[in-house]
Figure 1: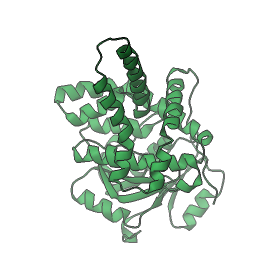
Figure 2: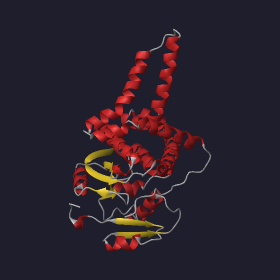
Figure 3: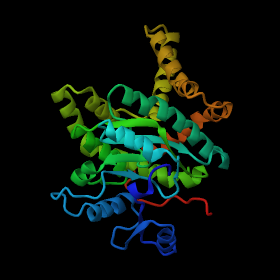
Figure 4: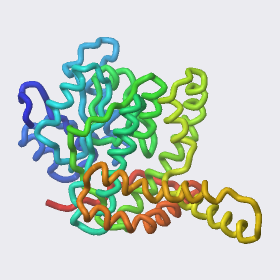
Amino acid sequence: MDYPSSLFDVLIVADHCADRTAQVARTAGAKVYERSESPSGSKGAALRWLFRLVFADPSAGDSPYDAVVIFDADTVVSPDFLKVMDTRLAQGDDAIQGQHRISNPNDGWFPALTWAMFLVDNRLQNLGRSNLGWSAKNMGDSICFRADVLRRLGWGEGLTEDYAFRQQLLLEGIRIKYEPAAIGLGEAASTWRVARPQRQRWLRGTHDARRQGGRELLTEALRRADPGLLDGALQAYLPSYSTLTLVTLALWLVHEALALQGYPVFLKAWHLLVVSLVVYPFWGLALERAPARAYVVILSGPLFILWRTWLALTARWSRRTVKWVRTPRKKV
């Protein structure tokens, strides 16, 4: 890190580890917290446990840290990450999401597609929302919080605790800003099969968070006439881009069939909507000046849309319990 070593600590949660994680991390100079209490394996539970230790007395206000940055264990960080975040904190920001990218796009088609989709999401959803004064996503990685925020609010609950925590921040009037200069590279699942449990957890978790917090977000957005809150509420209620695309295509075909039968329909409006959904990812890649390979892999987007929509339906309607499962990573 291009930052004075005396001004930051590396804190590791060795969560139910049966290997040499704690020993290796301590040898490298990290402060290691070994956790053995239940529940095991959940990132959210591990973070809540760590924050209770670091901010033992929320009323004291004497934490040794001004800010906390959260990384997954496999994240590779740009050397100037802390310097960039320090600048944003000095400007008064309370929560800053860095640019989270994929480190292994060459490991297969799925990580390549994930890499391309992250380029689009970072540009249009995170930067777009931040520029409008709304809240960027909490991606759960490469994100910085002022210590007072975590000491007061803790961390989110559920299968997708980062999504739930963003909802809580919105209700508290805290907007997550996006900082593309602070880069963290994380590893995507290597195959569709490996990614499936992870995606099922995300989809079930976001559905649960929407059901629990969506109504409050919408009520508060209307009461405060707050567009940032309204954006969060709409995200909770509206279908994902994948589902929206499938529904739009289905309705467009229905209208085409009705038009052939002589019924009055607004085909031009449906054509415009379909074209906008198709152009959307390519527009994001163009703004990012992405390499040609990103355009090639994004062409497989329809397969991903079908796959993700099926997972979303099964995650929502299935009665099977979905648990937090660690996604396998490459061994080094």
